[in-house]
Length: 238
Length: 104
Image (tube, rainbow over all chains, first blue to last red; front, side, top):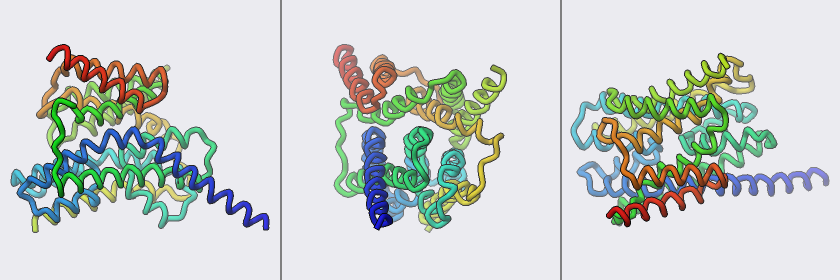
């Protein structure tokens, strides 16, 4: 009897946590939808095999790498160079995987491999601060993560599909392309609480800007690793 | 066929990055030496992404326009004060549109 009662409470709180995850993800959804519409419109008007282009969205599930892949394919670049460039852009995901993985250590492997499908910038940025509050067990963390990532992924895929099928006429003067950076600026404002963290962010900005011309689109990765390294050194010497 | 193979290779490679640490870090803890760097993944990656989006164009560094810079500053300040990211996006856009309207 008590077991049944506890199960009901747990189910309710799992659902509530999934909803909370989705709610916390909403600003990021506002950020990615205009980008998804732009990528979708580009796919609709490109000369690429529409099915391959459509499948690239759920298969790659990372906007910058997907866009680079499709643009380079259309430009007729060397296939090996395309794959290396796109994977270098996405290598940062390995850092997100490393930072998220310990939070799911108690979860069974099959579930972990399923959760891994939606590891990306926004899921990492939104979910980690919530987990760091320390009040959730691993069941709660799975629920929160699932709610957050399901909302992000479905909005991202839907925006691409809609724009690809019916096209998207975004008024240029509205500057909806600024939604993505502004959403990330909000996260940045929340994540620079300590001096090493602020230093990591500043170095990230500086190196990404100065290194914009680095080969194979590696600037973001190099900037991220530099930022982390400098922050660790700063923390150790302070 | 090339298109399919490239898309498939990028997709599978990306999933390998995603799943790698989820598969390795099972029941055991992350070693202490790895915990420090992981704490700075968010600020460093956010800085790098934002810098790439706002301060570069076509592979070179670029100075942002007044409207963009104003929007970023107001948005940042809003979230610092309120902790509300959606509010930051809203004030950022209002600033962007206001400056664009004035400067034409």
